[in-house]
Every structure is written in C-alpha cells, then in structure tokens.
Picture (cartoon, rainbow, N blue to C red):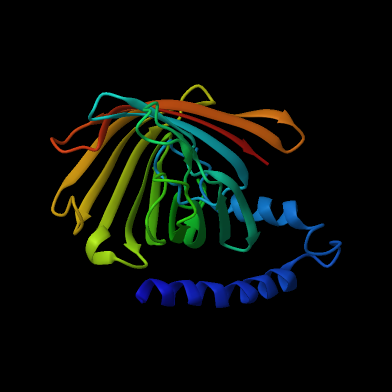
Length: 281
C-alpha cells in the first residue's frame, strides 16, 4: 500500500511539474515541444556529467535510447540470452523528472525444455532531489519509482506486477565518481509466496583519456520470503564504458561491456556477460 501511495503521489505531481515548466520556459520559445531540447540542456547542466554504468541505474537524468544484451550462465551450465535487458527510451519531460519506458526483453533459453519469449514491460519515473555539477559540488540524489507488469510470455516474466521504490546517489571527486542505488521489489500480489528482494548496487568509476570510463560494480540482492528467503547473492562486475561519441547533430553513441562474477556461495547464475549501447540525444 505504501508503494501504491507513492505512485499516486508521483502521478498527481506530474501535472504540477508540467505547469511549473511551462511558466519557467523562456518567453521567446515556441511552446512546450519546441522548447524541449533547450529545457533538457538546462536540466542536465545542473547535474554531474558522469557516464551511466553498465548495471547500476544512474541517479542522473538522461535522454537517450538504450539497448542491452546479457549472457547469463545458469547453475546448470546452460547460457541463455536476454535481448534488450529491460531497457528502452529515456526522456526528460519536466524539470527534475525523467521517465523510462522499458521494452519487454526477449529471452532465448537455449534449452528445449524451456520456451523462449518476451519478458515483462516496465517503466520508471525518476525525481531528482538534489544535484550540483562539477563546478558546484559534483553530487546528486534522486528518488525512483519503478513498476513492471506481468506481460511476459510463458515463464519469461514475473507472476505478479512488481513495484520498486529506489533511492539513488552519487558523488564525484575529480576524475573519479561513485554511484549507487538502493531499492526494494514488492510484488503487488502473492507476496508471501513470491517474497521481496532488496537490490543494492554500487559503482566506482574513473574517467580517463577523454572518452574511457573503466568501472567496477558490486551488484547485491537480498531475498526476503519466497523460495530463496534469507539468502543473498552478490556479483562483482568489472567493465568499460566508452563515450560519448558524437554522431550527428544532438545524437551521440555510448557503448560498453562487462563481466559479472559471483562473489557469494549462493547465486542464481554466474560468469555473465553484459553489452550495452546507448544513443543519447
């Protein structure tokens, strides 16, 4: 119920953000959509200019299209692919607000006993609480609210809608930055059976040679209730992100890859590969 209340509050707040933005737009602009990129540039100038990590969702507000491919090796030894990685279109419609529309991923199990198919559709709303660019403090604090709908085919999605409130944070020190998220996944129904998960991700990043961002992530999940209740898993994820490379006009290219290694005895998969490509605009 607390998650639903938060979602309702965010939904009611969006029209207020829109009104605030329309009144703060320059008098010479041609309207909300004509002023879109001017507004986005101003909003992004007020936050750090780090790169988005591979697995940790950034606390920064981004405007881009993103597509990931994950190769996950199950404990049985079979490697299956996740095409899309539950990523998609990211937009900044209002001051301090980002909306993420995440396309359903396609899961190829490489196992005749398990049918392939699409996973769940999901979305996230970010609200930036505090931020300062590199000249004014180099930090950020953002609240997320995410939800996924059980639209997946066969066994490729969750058995219930999932609600995920999250807090995200980051601080930079020269060419180094640390980013992280802390969130809880709540099933909208059957919570006693499905359980809850606490997801805690942290990334350490260094910016070198203008466009290279080597990083290492600690991706942790704690299970409460359900079949894995009381267990935890953590992956260490070294990786490299390259960008932003200018393509044309506002469109850029950022891409990177990494490798997840289980650091706990319990893990649902191991030795996972990640490839991510983004087109910021």
